[in-house]
Image (cartoon, rainbow, N blue to C red):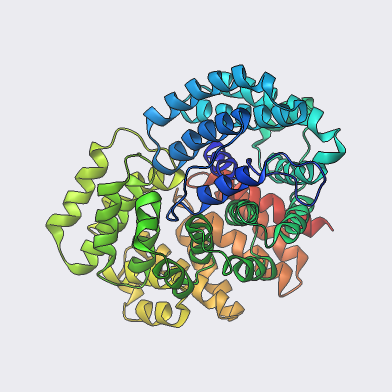
Length: 481
């Protein structure tokens, strides 16, 4: 999954020129093209570019198409354009050609990784990194170097243990906190510069979305910056982050403000809209998901969308359509994202799950904590089987914790731990992890925190294992300070 996240982060990031420096990597015309790539609904007249820039943007456009639509044809066209670009660059400025080739080499590697060619992808990535090291030596490239250093600091910090040692061999070190600091500074410098600022916002927003622990200051700052941008790609990242932060109302406002043609250029917006509407318990989620299926040619998030539609039909009482979504997931050949893999595991329990449990989860994800608690209280938990009672207590404890009712939340988490001793679902380890965080951050009880962390490690045998392991490590590092 981390490779897909890296792919998405790199997808929007590399074409910008040096800001405020005497020597820039892109001409003014090139920056116009860059602006259009982030605002595809705007009309762009033919812009004459140098052979180097023209070849670069042509290649990069195929990369964007592969990211947005996941079409194998776009990947093939990228590889062909990449080969053609290597023949054009001798006519370019040496610093410019090295920089552009470095970016395209990284993009090439990401496509190869996505197409299950990890060895070829690694070779391409290393080639790109070597060129970037040369670019770092140029005073005219210091701002670009800052951006890339920030990205490497964040991404390398997320690598799984078995890849970390290999990264160190090439001098790649991770430091998430420093990386985010450098990215914030980069966004500030880029403000007011068309194209380049949108690129910086997408980069920063994706890193917040995928790699940052909850940080109200950083997310609020990003929302403040992103509201000034009319780019649908920036809006997609902003709305995704709002959904992650459980601010469903903000997510829907951002999506509703987009012109209809934005969805044509970036069909993943339909998937996001469907999720936001489903969390709102709105029937309009159905059409959004159906539009996603009609317009998105790729395979990512298809299983996830079917799962969410199954939940909607379960709430609506349409058993036949729930079964149809289960069959649709079974018919899929690949499950690229962690969301899709999770959908395979969860969809078969939807038809039997109590509707109130489904609604409670959706309401919580939408940021409606009180409504979530009220929904759960409509059920008599003593009548539930242990399988559903564990989830009932987990949903209740999460909502109580957000409401700062910590003692009640701790009681709920203890009930989950008791019920989920042999459960491979994530409820047990996450309950222990959340309880550990309460003991450390709120109650200042380090001994109880340590005990809960040890319990979280013991229970971490099933879903989201690597993610839970990383979060346990993050909290343990706080405990050691």
